[in-house]
Image (cartoon, rainbow, N blue to C red):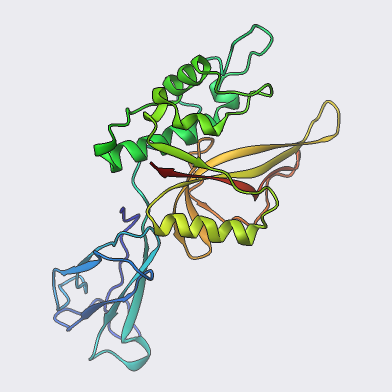
Length: 286
């Protein structure tokens, strides 16, 4: 599990911004996901220092979701005698981007000269799948699954006819010996599932410590035709923070949190939008 950031609050004299030292502070774990194990506090100090800080470290448990720490100050005024910090965990794996120069200009699924898209242009699903495979490889070393990257996976999939006629990935091919040595299986689900049902399935997988690939809508107004074009974009879900999912987005360095119900306008001129969620891809170890 990973902790995304530090949360700091200082004890100050009421009505001022001056920190107060030598004030007792008690720390407890206030919330954690149902069924989580392994979470623990390492309390560094129980009284505030010259900066008005008392320090603790939280070790997150085995479920990638929200954990809370409550800091109580018994001698502080009633309105401000406790502060709760929320920390969100995520599964640890690679965070490949499709625009990485190591493979961005490699031709994507080129088995003929009639299709000339690159991994940088078309490789979001390929990149998300590379991140997922490496999670299984690093988390379950006993399976001896080889590490990969978008370029290597692209080459392997081409060699085993891993793309359909529209150049979409055959997800079932993850089970091939060349990819996972038969140790990762794709779990298909009906296309008719609602977003609420998909959310439930994602939460169940995260509860088991397994990442999920999600597909979201992307759309924009084509300036040449003035028509709205829509396509799918794939990301890897690694944890949950409130109503948002923590994602590894192959197409962005900035997008970390994703709400599956939202549709966000990215560019007002082209009406370029992102979201909501369309579908998911689940996998399991064999």
